[in-house]
Length: 411
Image (tube, rainbow, N blue to C red; front, side):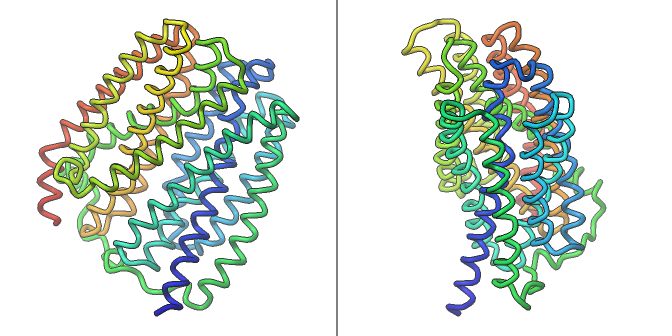
């Protein structure tokens, strides 16, 4: 029993470290984009295109990775993803701007090789209850990685160069990829194939169209697009917003971005704690509440961002950070919790893949949309965010009836 418990802990730890490294090598461009714009290495449309390339290939790669994950050992996919991502971080500072788009697209696909295999490893080796907890731990590893990256980046910019961020990520990602492959092989050993959970053994018995139709999940897919737009839009553009709206240095604007993952961790833990409450136990109503609060916060941000005072600057930062945190909570409900509702249909993996893909459709749209609107006004950008959140509320409302009935019938 102790051996099994120790093995399970090591599995969770290794997955968390791998996901930590993947986020570090995924967020590097977002962390230094403001500095690259200031140094005129890239222009705003190119910066947006680089971000969009990652989001599109990451989103599409989720579906492909899920299929490959059923045929290829997860440890090989994850190690390959980390090593290729490290190579992309090495190449990006060395190529011309137009080639950066292609390099970061490859990085997006490499990153997609991480999450579906992690889900398979955890699901096949842990009970459902422990799986949910492990999912939270692995997700928090990504947020901690983002915090350290945003603390590390200003130091690189000040004492070395923005290029040092990418080169450091290269070494870290490749080393972790190799260690993960060796360590996971030792930990799992001959038990790697293991036994799946009861949910994993269920074969799809109902058509996908019927599952989507009867569950009312299609409007939720659209709500997820809105969530992805907000979550990654704020994270990617906050350093640039802070630099341009308030005239501060890129080092300061990158440093203040540390509040985003800190708030995200707190928010996700809070939602996890109250997930059993009636309002948040239903993902459609829970996301509706989160979108509603965000609508008001973004509207306030759009009004206050025009005022150039230090106290207002702090308030604007808090408004953006809280909104970002609420979107991460929404992500936890719709991406981590919701697919589990479909275990009885044998379609939870498929639904999870669709949900992830929808997230990054929104992320890709946000890069171009925010790039276009922000050139005219950051105040208008915040108003746009408020409108997107309002749309998310509307889609959650449309899903409520059928989805609530579906949840009750599958309890």
